[in-house]
Length: 346
Image (cartoon, rainbow, N blue to C red; front, side, top):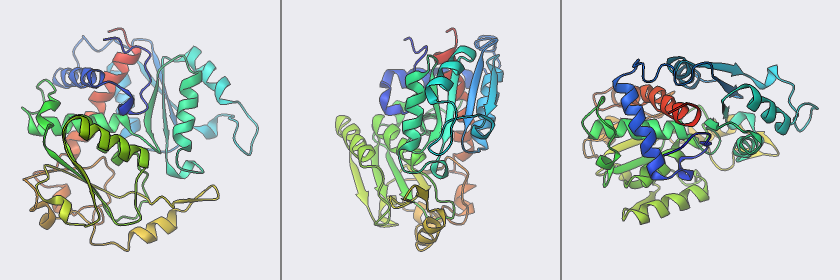
């Protein structure tokens, strides 16, 4: 299977076999992390990391990934570049993308809620870069999707319900398991990207999906439609509930995370404080031990950073059924596999 040069903006746009190819290679790279089979795949190659928003895991994991593959990850910020915007003169996306393609072998872009004037603007920007670039463009998280996180999630959940880390990836173990993606109150006004990716990847691999949130915190209708279609194709169920407790019944994977409302933007401005104040009105929407007791001995998952005490209690986030650190580690292995397959010489 040839994935060389392929963009990764949303997992829904890749075939199941292509996603499995990434997971299989990621599992091998995790099992034998510093094997000479991997350490020169990106020798002398550069991966540009274009950060509109800061990060912890994303920058660390991509830099480690490039280094362990024998390449180099170069950190870029818009403020250090003369780029054209709606209010300033500068270089166009076409020109920047064409030049970047002459220098590097891959481009990652991270652009989230407070760096865009409306929902979808980040997705539009990434796709414009992908249109003009002749190198693969990888979303490192944008306002709509977070494909690397989705694959790391799937890998982690598969390990917990399969044979564990170090064994070949087997996402089939998740077929028929119930994934609960539940809204949580919090003070961070988060974008939709991670939770939407979880809905898509879980439903693609045959999980029953329950989405829970208070009235007024709807997600992207297109993503909801895709999730419904994925579940239908797999003969599985998809439901939406507006109760903070009901969705936990029988769940195998609980994903409790805050996300902003569809009213987060007005006149090109991100209304962060308004979103925080709105979210904190719902303290009952927290994942705690009492709710987890309603599940089928579920694992707790979260892409991090966690707003502890709001999204989830410490005893759940740091408990024996929490897979948060496994999923965080898997970002490294998944991203190594993605870079190797799209930029390397496999």
